[in-house]
Length: 226
Length: 249
Image (cartoon, rainbow over the protein chains, first blue to last red):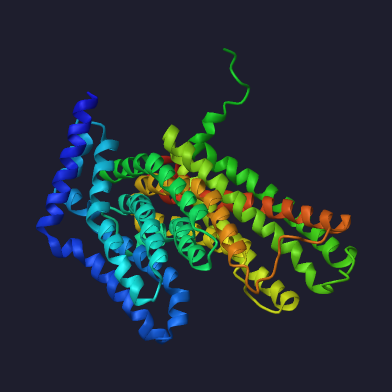
């Protein structure tokens, strides 16, 4: 039974990743968004290196957060429209496992690329090398939290009027802890006080979200499928 | 198993709860009016002028009760929501949606009075203090809950989706609160420390507690009145509502 559940989850993961690879422009849109937003800030506030270094961590984190949020709309929508999601809910394998696999695939397809491009953007903001490493580490820990919590919002607004804007309203307040600890870690490193405390707290958020969010997502999806 | 004297589960049916809410609401409203009159009398005529803040501090009698109620109502709302998910009772979801606007109103009132209080005492309407920021996020959570319910046409689905959101929110509130608090202590710029309130005179505290109860009674009265409206709206095709309407006509 457990072997079957794992196989089913891995199957869903592979399928979603394959779909993301086939539709590269969909998967890459959040990354481009991230890059464009990060480039707009210096144009808006001016190119002073000192100022940019000061606001860099916050801007990059907010950019990653918004990019993740924009990619949420596609997380369940296609499977909901063509009935795949309903079949998953009816399948003998635990729905929670399949949902967790879908969220993992979403993170690999749209969260991980944000982590990969973040060092380049951090260079534009003049952050030093070890701070860039902390930024990447905070995003590695933080973007899965964003995907997990965001998936709850995506599941709740499935097939609902004005879903995209609604997701923002539901999810952004819940993103506050990840933003505070993530950007805080980078800030702390920049200030020389050490980022370990923030990264530990971000890790704790990730553990909590990994444990609880799949159940909330599955419950929300079942409500949407009724 | 002995049967309880009052079968409380009877009132989980909207039809049974409608008249009960109608009977109770005026009493709670009267209690709210009485307590508010007492509390405001204490606030304006009995409580002495604060030696530091002058008369401006008197807004505390509205501000603090509003903040407490805004947090308390969210927990109660999440409680009703959880009950609705577990027992699948229709009335629980209606109670949750009846409470949300009152909670949001208190959160807004708390922010507004806080801004009015901040201007004369700290010289600014808004500081990014931990308590102000978490109250603002609480207001966003209320607005998200109401927006989600408003966007879903099917009332039962709206109840359940709102319930999941309220439960997720109530788990997140402590995390948000602490994250904002730590964020604030780490960004300790020119912000004002509000965490150490001066010790309060007993009469001020009494006035505040009376106002807390006044707001509490008000919240119950308004929610009961609102849940009656929601019941009528949702059960408009039910026989007993039609009979009620004919009886009025």
